[in-house]
Image (cartoon, rainbow, N blue to C red; front, side, top):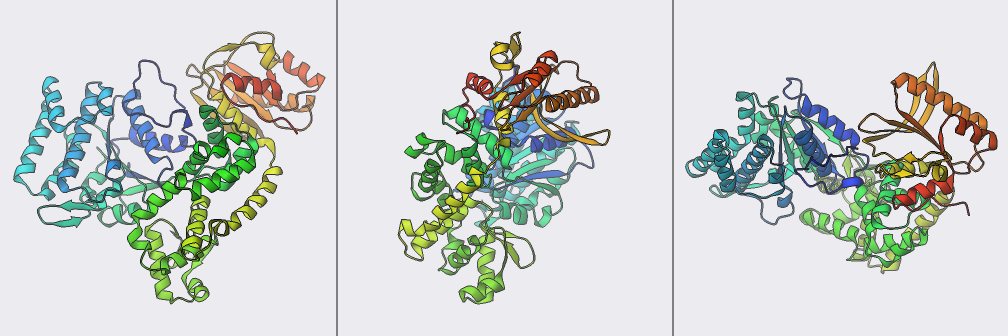
Length: 590
């Protein structure tokens, strides 16, 4: 988590803000990749994931960091997102204009410190005028090249020319460049108006992907199309792919808590756990369940309300998830609407989530020829509904909400059932979920504490009211908050739940215990010893220690914490801190 100074302007608008959760690992990986340019061992990279899993957010944050936090590597950002789902594909001329515009705009913005330029949509003529005003002969030369190529060369030559321009300029001018391209799979279907043909121009990136002076970082939301087609062929082996996975339990909880805080929606640990289980950690599904137009969202954190919100989101045309999945299926209508076979096979796959799918078994059970089933599975693979795990083996949808959407529509359309009959299994599934959530242990409070600390803004509060300390306490703005556990020291494994660090290296070490009984002296002494080791090992000099226990502390434990100068909070005190930052408090025992 990086806090920007007032002087820093983000050239690309970051739409996630404080809702950027669990993608720090990806950001670190691609930051290291960019800062190694130029390096012969540095390959081009691809960020792969389903639509609305956070790929663009990672690339935007990467670009903004490269723009503001270093001067050696020039970042270039080119997006083809606006060409997604268009009925007519882009033309070769569209591509040439978009690619050169993105390159010139990025160059001028970085070279002359004009971050505002990235938020605009200037034409090439306007960029050329800016280059003239800046007396930049290189940018003017690129404009002249483009105008000449557009008039005198074939569209293929124009495409090749703009693709290889960053590579040539980076090498000849000793200008290391990171070329970031969002929605790269769009380039698998480009129209050449002179030859009246549609073709895949990704093969034209062979040299551009191979250079270590201007390697590429591309993303794509059509997983199969990107990996098998856009990054196959001539690009095979030229990109290292990183797959963006759904959130795990902790980060799903954290996103629910942050959304609740931002939107003023009541949340608690049981709601966050239920949402994680129902969504499988897919961030867009979590977002839809927390921002739904359903009136039942006002009754959160009731799990009965969540059940009604899920029904609304998946079956009502006003539901965000209904609209999302309908849009996705429309893209593949030619694949999936060729009779009932694909739908029957698709419905069969959703009944066995997480299990391998054998075409022979499906053919036998639903009475369809093996080759026909294989063909249907290939179509479902192209639509990213199933995943291939072997030569002829597949796996069904990992997205639970997608599975329910398919169930609902199949039963209504193919089996001709009413809405209530079509979703009859959902209620039984939800009853089982309720039982699991009721037995859920409160250790997820760690995610909640993380979320609250991420909102600290430097204010001072009364120490006695919130932390059982007589002096006022500053709640600093943290640059980085990490979960850390399993640290090994002198052969023993111990755990400090959270470490948080400010820009000037002040550190907080935080322990969270969601127990049913007050914390005793032995556990407190253990925490003191563990934190002493961490401080010594890491060389920390400015350290604040905070112990949060839901049920508070015994008299001896409280005395030990006070004497050691350690901040301590019970549930009411922590909830007081949470409310300072507009979080709803963790629930009390019923």
